[in-house]
Length: 186
Image (cartoon, rainbow, N blue to C red; front, side):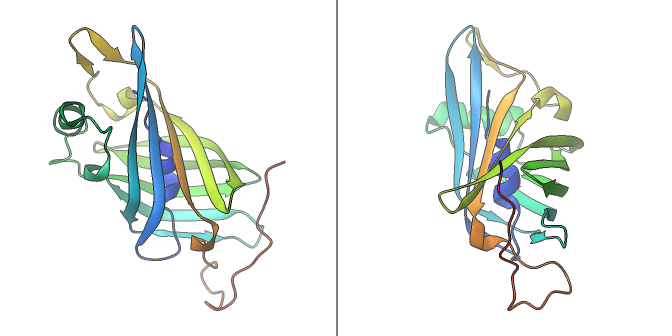
C-alpha cells in the first residue's frame, strides 16, 4: 500500500496554525499485482514550518487528520481506517519535527502511536513544495493489510505538497518580512 506520506508530512507543515491548501498522496502497491492511491485534499493541519537563516526549513508538530484519507473505494477506505490505521484510537499522523535543506529532509513522524524517523527529498514544482518519502507500515506497528488474497507491500510512497506561500519566517523574524531566497533543488 503506497500512501503519499511525504505529501502527508509536508502537507502538514505550515507557518500558520491551520491550513487547507496542502495535498497528500499515498501510493500503495498490491501483491501479487496492482496498485492504488489514497489521497487527502484540503489538508487541515496544525503546526509550523519556517525558513532557517541557512536557507533550509524546520517544521514542528504538523498534524494530518487521517479520517480525511480516501482511496475513492468505500470498502477499502473502511478497512484502511478501521482495521489498519485504527483512526478511532489513532486519529492523526504527526510530523513531530523535521529539518530540510538542499532538497533533502529528515524528521520524526508519529503514526499509529509510534514515532519513527523519516527522510526524503523535496523540490519546488509549479509554485508548490513537493516532498516525497517512503514509509513502512510495519515500522509503526500497523497490521499487514490483506483482503481476499491480495496484500499490501510493506513500503508506501508518500508525496506531500503545499503552496510555497505557506512557509513563514523563522521565529523572531518580523511577520511582514518572509525571506524569498528559498533553496532550489539542483
